[in-house]
Amino acid sequence: MTVRPLVPAPVTAAALAARRLPFAFAPRFFLLLAAGCILVIPAWIDPRAILILGAWNLLVMAAWMVDLQRIPTGDAIDVTRAWTKPLAIGVPSGVRIDVRNHSAIAVQVDVTDHVPTTLRRDLPQVRLEVASGASADTEYEISPAERGDTPVGRLYLRVRSSWSLAERWLAAGAEQTVRVYPDMADARRQSMFLLRSRQLALEKRRARVVGLGRDFESLRDYQPGDEPRDISWSVTARRGKPVTRVYQPERSQAVWILVDAGRLLRARNGARTKLDGMVNAALGLSEVALAAGDRVGLLTYGRRTHARLAPGRGGRHLRAIVDALATVIAERAEADHARAAAAVMAVQKQRALVVWLTEVAETAGVPDVIESAAKLTPQHLVLFGVTRPTELTAVAEAVPGTEDEMYRMLAVHETLDRRSALLKGLRQRGVLVVEMEPQTPAARLIDQYLSVKERNLI
Image 1: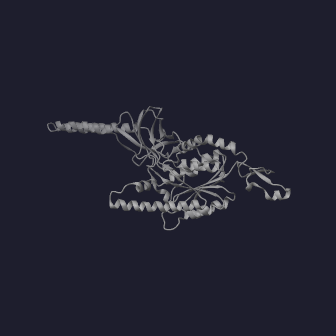
Image 2: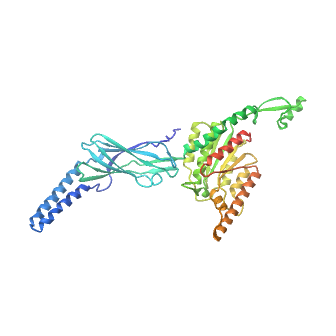
Image 3: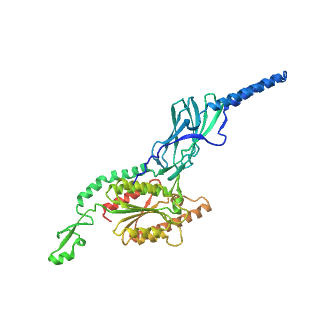
């Protein structure tokens, strides 16, 4: 299977006529016409000056026509759009525009690139001076605001010669679709900080717990200090003496990451949506889990399943996860959580860690996602990840100055109390719950994952 390059491919196209009348008058043409209007003044004294004015205008028009014929068209001008690095949400990047002139004269080219507002708020316009038989290039900056596949349109050119009397309007068919990825560098920064801070503690713990884990290795005679749960009673009965099962740390465990793309994840935390934060958290956790030797599976869903990747490992699998996370878009409807839970239970028969990244709806009853997560607990260890409601917490902690603010604060307290009760109920049913910070969602999630690994909970 061919792997799609992270950096969008450059596109080259010939500049052709953009419309039925692909030419116009350049600014210098109007300046020359305006200069001829000076002859209107002596025309009040000698009407023959009008004839001179008419001759001047005809001369300017003839010069314009000659200049128009000199300007290259057809395949005499090629335009290339090249991307300087992979596109990531919120990360500034550059686009290089290269114009090659195959004609016999030097030209001045104004290029307008038809990029969507999700890449740049205004249409980029650049000017290039291109000598005969040469090329020139320049760059403009973009800052992607949304993940996913984004269509980029044509390049529009206004070409003038050194006379600057006429100009041709051309268009280069450089349409393409580019993919904006999650902020991989930010996710990696959060994960690397945690890994470095825990590295020494993890090494010390490994030295103390050699032989622990849940993967069976061998049998041996019982020794004082062995866990009673590790005694093999069937073998003990046959041999007539206590026999203990010896385990080794699991070399590879399955970690499923479920990403909710329902309506609640459309809400914004600053410039990004909650879903963007969940995607970053999922990406950071995937990198850490794969580096730890675990197999990572992914399920993104709304009313339907967006993407499902069976647990795997390796660089190619991580790339598949990145692509799946890049293209998940929040839906307007509530997600089908029961279907997501059923999909995991159908394919994952052995015990696994299920990391569920979602939000809790404000409903009179118990939200569906709570019930669906609880149904997984008999078979799997569930880690339930939600975003900490920092804005609501700030309102609840503020001192009300008016009656309206007091009622607002009471409503927020009621909302937070109900939320806490729902999460407490999940914990009582054996679900691990982590509330992530909106600005650094991956940090708490990865920290909880490392704790699970340290305690051999899977």
